[in-house]
Image 1 (cartoon, rainbow, N blue to C red):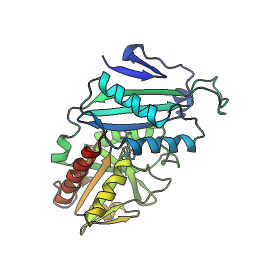
Image 2: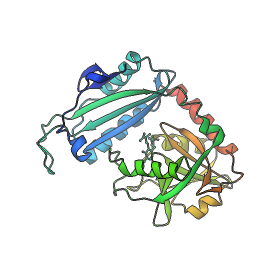
Image 3: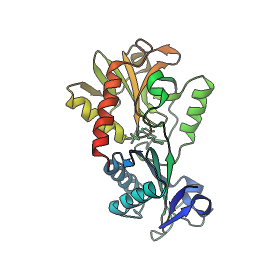
Length: 284
Ligand code: PDD
């Protein structure tokens, strides 16, 4: 049985409890982070901690612990659960208060929950060999996607629709351009140029995205941060997604049409290799 963390305590997963009045449960008044673990080490922890603070600030939510304490909790969960490869999920909510749309008193104690998910095939996912099939769906999420809130019903519906249409995931489209994947950032490559949507309130500022774009630029690859259309994606040479749970994973078809050769391409394979090599070295 897993050991999870709830508000200062390490507990067996079946003993961990959160109030029915918790605002995360009633209002999705909560933010989260997902950090990957390889060789028992955290990948990009400082980036995830920084984004968490930003999400909390945007929602005027108090931070329950310092970054140092947060790192300590992550490390303790890795040890207690013997985690070598997988994910650590973290959620902070505004805490428990009588149901009211207005935020409760600022002294309300936030809820902090963390748990591990062992994923033995995180690095060697079959998707890396086969590539992913993507379908496009309208982006019907709220307007502050740069805040990593737990309002994940629409992405969840999107993944269900993708599966029903025989695909692996969905890319969301707004005003004719791709915003991002349901739980990842989206990219195309044409004539050696990597194109991905610019940062703004329309997408999550991926921690993996930041690292991958930096490595791409270091390797003298050209990067354009701008909107791209589905038509442009369909004429691309390669396509891929990035996230803490997929790293860099090739996309081989969109709405049933092949991208490039219809097989994972060389540039994406190279980016994945560089990303994993570098992040492993920097793991803590
Ligand atoms: N999702 N865009 C969205 C909408 C996401 O939910 C995520 C991450 C990303 C990629 O961000 P990062 O590189 O920091 O993981 C982009 C996580 C993995 C999840 O919800 O499980």
